Every structure is written in structure tokens, then in C-alpha cells.
Length: 196
Image (cartoon, rainbow, N blue to C red; front, side, top):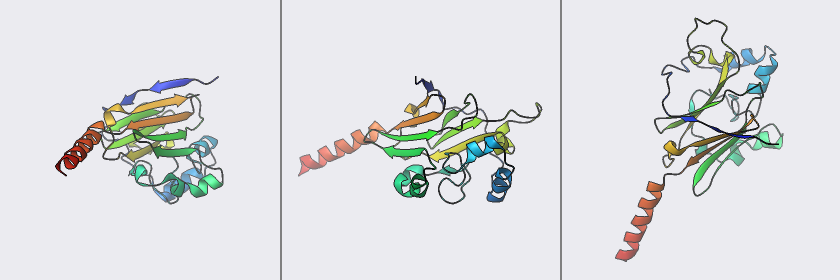
């Protein structure tokens, strides 16, 4: 039996200084070499949260212009090896991202839409070791959680983003295209056709 949960998409982020420590390739390789199974599940090849998802190292806390690339091209080698469960595409009405989430117990995934420019998917996989510590996102965040930040296309209607979690591990994010742009284009086409 499948269960589908609607996730709240936050638009006001309460942690302005998060992701203040960058994850570099050397640190990432050293971190993954520890052999922790949870780390392997979260940051494995083909995971949405892997810094190497796109073929070369890219800090997941930096915004990536995902929709500017064809998923078939960017993920082709991972798909052929069966190592990825990430997909994105667009329809006439929306941009859609689908991905498996790390199976580390009950998912704490959160989705933020920031200033109409960024969609952020993040979650915490490890409780903080010190209660006096700052927010887990502002330290070595990868030791406690995961993130992927994506640039939104210009025609994305960020106020209407929808996020769903199926069976606690399958994430789907739907980002509607801005209907105002479509209506403006339609009226421009209509005016141009009237003047001919």
C-alpha cells in the first residue's frame, strides 16, 4: 500500500546563515571514506544529494541550474549503470523533479522556495552531538544532514510549488510555470496577428 504525504513548501527561511561551510571535494572524499553506511546511502553515486551527481564535483549547497540541462545527457552514464533514481522534466504547465530520498528512518525532508530564485531540498540524518551547537546547517552540515539547492527557471511560479513524499522515500516536486508570462505572450501574439 502506498502512502502519499503533501509536504509544506516553506517560503520564509528562519536560518539566514546556513550552508556557511562549503563542502570541498577533498573533504567529501575523506568524509565518505569513513565507511558509515548511512553516509553511503545519502551521498552514494546517483543520489540527488551526491556532490558528484552531475559527473564532476559540485557542492550541493550551491544552487545548480538544473532545468538548463537535459536529464538524458547529464544522467546518462548513471542511468546506464542503474545507479540513479533522479529524474526531471518539464511539461507545458510545470517543471517536475522526482528523486529517491535516503532511507535513514523517518524522513525529515524540508522544501524551501527562496526569493523566487532557489528551491532547496534538505533534511537532517543525524542528531546534533552538542545541544549548545548552532544550527546544523551552519557548521559541517554534511555530517548531520543533506541538501540540494536548485536554481529556478525565470518562468517558474515559485509561490505555487508543490512537494509530495510517497512511502517516505520518493520525493516529487512540481513547479508550475508562470501563467502571467504565458498570458502576456498570448496577448502579444494576438496583437501581432491583428496588425498583419
